[in-house]
Length: 103
Image (cartoon, rainbow, N blue to C red; front, side, top):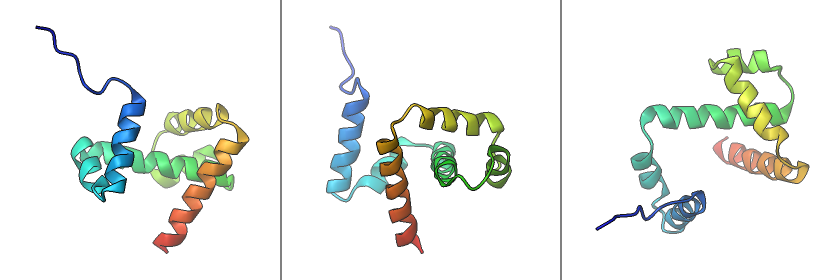
């Protein structure tokens, strides 16, 4: 008897997270899925993308501000370069909206 994993692709995970948001269980889900270090890394990645999209600081300055390596900043930069202007604008808007709510 062969067993296959139920979750095999990224879109299934995205749907799981979407469903957890709809049912107000997203914090519980993400806390269970990610270790504290992974959550910290995700927070750093969000801040990296946010700062890169703002365009006010150099990669070196972002690295120093966030306490991450320059290679980590470069990976974020390369990921942004692979996205369309429309996708980058959507991400920037999402980041701005959440930042406004947090203030």
